[in-house]
Amino acid sequence: MFENTKAFSGFSVDDIASAKKFYGETLGVRVSEENGLLTLHIAGDRDTLIYPKQHHTPATFTILNFPVDDIELAVEELNARGIEFERYEGIVQDENGISRDAGPLIAWFKDPASNILSILQLS
Image 1 (tube, helix red, strand yellow):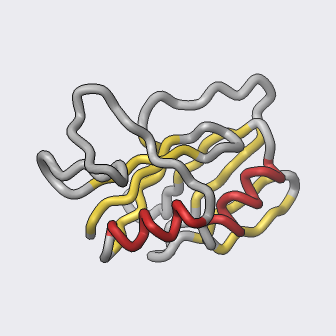
Image 2 (cartoon, rainbow, N blue to C red):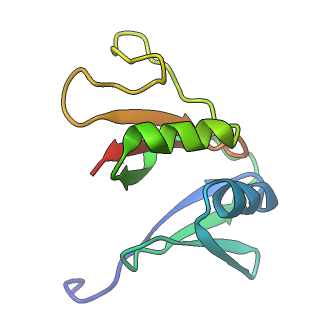
């Protein structure tokens, strides 16, 4: 039944204007807004819907994964844009917040407007 449908993901925020500024200006993702909803136009034809929700509660897990070719450069550029990377107890991370211990190189950050967790991952 769903084998040919183009599914998409979505998540809630408590402030669409702040989310639009963060994703569109800070991260540089192409965004559009219509009927009070925000759409992130992510490369690979994978749009993500952001919708307002009163009493929004952030997820406690990663919502968006951004594969990058150079994680050190991406972390440096995002730091310059005011993004602070998360630190987790029990996970070995370098001085920039990059986990190099096991698996792919990863660095975690949150959207300050909605506290949504995203990661950079070496592609």
